[in-house]
Amino acid sequence: MELQPLKRIIEAALLASAQPLSLPQMSGLFDEFEMPSHEDLARAVEELKVDADGRGIELVEVASGFRYQVRSEVHAHVCRLWSERQTRYSRALLETLSLIAYRQPITRAEIEQIRGVAVSTNIVRTLEEREWVRVVGYRDLPGKPALFGTTKQFLDYFNLKSLDELPPLGEIRDIEELDPQLALDEPRGPIPARVAVDDAADETAGDTAQGEHADVAEPSITEDVDGPTAADDEASNDHRETPTAGDAHEDTPESIA
Image (cartoon, rainbow, N blue to C red; front, side):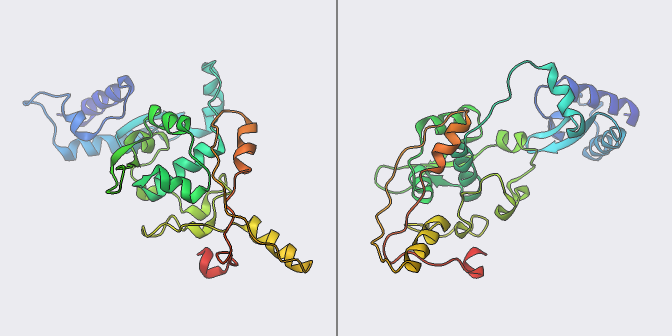
């Protein structure tokens, strides 16, 4: 098949499809007598990408395949076509999603152990309803706790082709409360029983400066309540991990790295 007719067919299919299309799915648009080769399909897609330069839309590749989408420069204007309010997610939900993305597979208990607060059932339900996370297995422990991992829909939503394209954890500024000592971008290893945070270290330093030595209390686990308001974000900030006696330590460049 000639390249130009092939480009028109692929372009029309991508615009008509509600989901991204992979190259094998594009091949399914043709019968066995006119089916283009994989190389021809890839070449047609690349040329369509070039054709979109300077336009309000772009052709991008995500985990599920290729799709046309609105460019970020004009998104603020185009989004006015839809009257519904933009969804806002609480800090608790975003922290939980980040832990699943960077430490998957991970159990709910392990997320709670790292964050120091109980994970609300509403948070898990929301992530599963959005099809951003799913149960990928079960830990070989009493009770067989479920292991959570991300999905292709998660990658598609954030314009990622694979988990390798996730930004380094140090570049994430929206979730300031995550302790850098977690080192989530490093190879998986044992999850620490307790994590010391900067606020606790500062409080201990202040007590030492005043000559007071108070016993550090055991951390208590409370439950996050997920919601779309800023008040929920503030509430989730109130639940922070407190180190037990003997576990407090100072952040050093080696430990932060």
